[in-house]
Structures are given as C-alpha cells and as structure tokens.
Length: 210
Ligand code: ATP
Image (cartoon, rainbow, N blue to C red; front, side, top):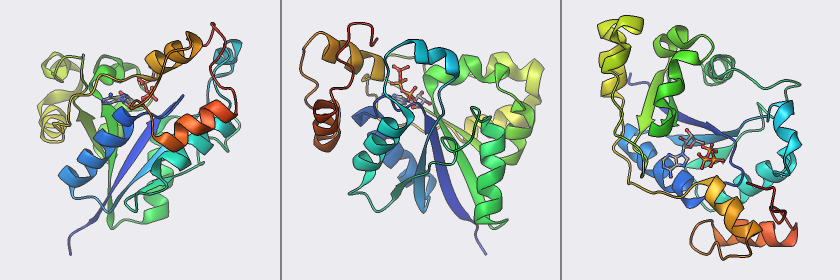
C-alpha cells in the first residue's frame, strides 16, 4: 500500500505571509500530500530583545491564514516546548504521531540551503524524512553539489529528487515588519484576516520591529 504523505512546514511565521501559503499549497500538490502542517517555531530567548510578535500571536496568525484551506493545519507542538525544538525532534514526534505508514516531507525555502550543514542531526534528518527544498524568489535555485563530501552521493540524489519548483515569490516577513513600522500598506502580502489581526493587536508598529 502506498504511504500517506504529509508535509511539515516549520518557520517563525512572524508574520505568516502569502509566500508561505502559496509555496505550501504548491508543495502539497507536487508531493501529493494529504496536507501541510504549519509548525511555528519557538523563538530563541535572545530574539525577544526585539519587538517581534509573541508565540501566541504568531500561532493565531498562522491559524487564521490556513483556516479556509482544508489541506492545511497548524500545530503548536514546538511552541508548547520549554526550549526551541530541533527539527529532528519535531520530525520524530510527527513520525510517531502519524505512524510508520506515513512518509514525511520537511519543507524549507531555498534561502535555507547554506544553513543545512549546521542543523542538529542533519544526517539523521536527511535519512529519516524527505527534506524538500522549495524555490524562493530572490534566491538562487537550490544546488547541493558542494555538500557531496559531507553527505555522499545518495543523500544528494535524494535531496535533488525532493526539490520542489514552487512559484517564485519574493515576499518576506522582514519586509512586512518594516513596511508596517514605516506606516506602509501590506495589502496583498498577507491574508486579509492576518492583516486585520495585525491591525487589531497593533503588531510590528515599533521602528525596531525589523
Ligand atoms: P524573515 O524575513 O523574518 O527571515 P521569512 O519570510 O524568511 O522570515 P520564515 O518564517 O523565516 O519567513 O520562513 C519559514 C520557511 O518558509 C523557511 O523555510 C523559508 O525559507 C520559507 N519561506 C519564507 N518565505 C518564502 C517565500 N517567499 N518563498 C519560498 N519559501 C519561503
């Protein structure tokens, strides 16, 4: 029997924007996944120095952004932990949750490729799930050739097979925070319900919010 495919999408989502939701939908379709689970990451304590949104607000905005999409869900698994979670721990948790008949795809944007060698337990992660790198507007197409010495040809081939040619969207959370702090419009950059939440809660207004 074919395995059930589930896509997991971790991020700070500070705030979640249309780049996130459009590529997640495209990735879900390309993989043939049952659904995409958005997993907001707990922020490292140092980042609280800046007036970004709280864990609760980021979770609420993510839930609003996916509320009309039956193929998307949001999980507070990482937010409930006392410390930021390693992706490997999160993947193992979801593998246990969905069972051995589920094949998990961890989504990451092309801007994250150069960081991969620094991820905790990256080799185990490459072996235990499908790390699926998505195209991102404004960033190079993913190229793993430089990692061959680190991970070997088989892992590289798996990474390359799992690349998803998602639509190129240049929106970033940084740009959205800057625009709000500068009093500029974020229309069409976030879902209307997310824009309303940001407005109602007065998020990102400080000029340090970048
Ligand atoms: P920031 O500007 O604060 O760094 P961000 O816009 O990159 O934030 P994150 O929440 O850090 O958003 O991203 C979560 C995941 O989504 C990462 O894997 C990132 O590469 C990916 N991602 C974010 N924006 C896009 C986009 N426009 N296209 C493709 N992938 C994206």
